[in-house]
Length: 182
Length: 198
Image 1 (spheres, rainbow over the protein chains, first blue to last red):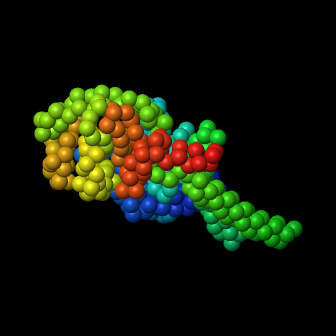
Image 2 (cartoon, rainbow over the protein chains, first blue to last red):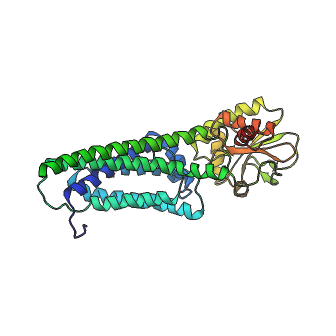
């Protein structure tokens, strides 16, 4: 399904490429340290203990599939829907625990430990917005070489902003603690 | 005109990317700074009964059917260790706790605590070689101490007061609880704060 408004191919390509890297990196981080991810998944207290192990393997595998799929225009839309589904599950788990008042667990997003916060939900909503852009049909347009510069630059800039945002999310709680402490 | 726009576009991309790299580096440096000033030793959460308070009294029955009482004056201190079968770090700490229980046997007993299916825990107890240790299952116990993260340890002194508590991930952090109790501070964090103020 696509919205009626076709997007510029440079824009959809930037969204797809950046989200592909984000999903592949997230999958790689989780699979590389699967024990930590299992603990993080268990800490959400949503799944029976017996399901944690298979879940901790299935989720990063699906993330990797979605990340790979976003790279290929032919299956991009399906991959984007899969990624949206995964984001929905993960963000739902975060929101449920926030509603329960549980914040001091690792989100298990991969990379550095990030405690749960409403900002995490907001971040995932931004990612979901990116996925919706990525799944739009591109308007046919002859690509100029400058478009490739735009796509490369835009993708790198988005990835950098995402990394910086995660870094700030990870330190946000610590900064608050330090403020309360002083 | 067109050429001028292209040149300006490329220059702008270079500048944008340089700024993003600088932003990532700055955010990372802030993160490193917080890591450096972060407390060493077992991290203490500010919830549940406070250090120095009397430990809530519990009369429980362990997996082997033996009575275990917690939070009452006793001849030895108690290290209450909260774990779960789904926590790999907990499993890593079990042999370390075994060795601590041998070396500190004169003044310390170790009680393992968790909640959930007894069958699963009996399996964990057997596999991890914890047969000789009291192992209690009580949701109420975990709720009372507000255990949110595992592995979590609470040191109850022989007078039945909470001597120290915190999230523990290594032998050093378990020992930091002993040190905190000996020094009469709630946690190593507080000790550092006291030193800083002095």
